[in-house]
Image (cartoon, rainbow, N blue to C red):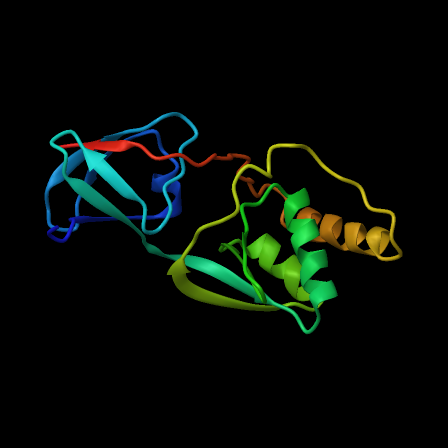
Length: 172
């Protein structure tokens, strides 16, 4: 089988069910997929003519969050969930779209935050279900800090979108 053409897309574009796009070779295509589809790096799309198109996750401006302990990284993930923020979870890192409010909050928690240009593939399906409330010894302190950061950056919009995962096809 010959090498499939590639389509490099940022995360937001990989969540769209309808999209006019340009393959990396310059060919124009139209994607039509079921609502809620999220394309992942390496997904293969089947074109109307039976050919294949390989999806590549584009490098994006992201925050890569690390912490000196698993507990602190877990606390950071918990609070990012409360903000309904799409997060990619790795064994020793969290990755999210660059956001100065969240960056400030994470640094105040004691996390190490770096701006990087990397592909972004957040977890799907978990950020539509509402807030959870903690009862451990740090909950009140963490919540107060998160609220303080929010208040300092009042007016900042938050993305409440979510996407599922499925595969679609491309029209050429």
